[in-house]
Length: 33
Image (tube, rainbow, N blue to C red; front, side, top):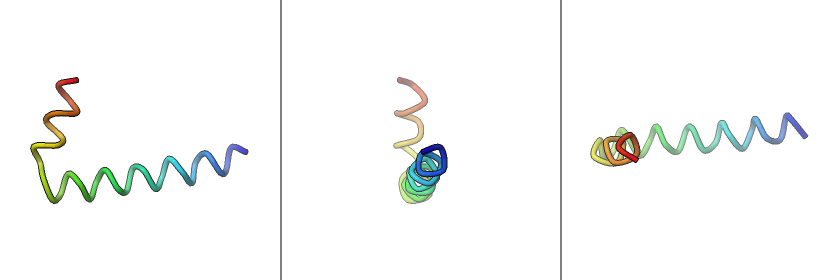
């Protein structure tokens, strides 16, 4: 259970990092929320 959650969290984190690398404005919008 916990391991599955960590894997999903890691995948989301990696996707977020790629999105930030492509478009920094996305990161600013997320931080403002």
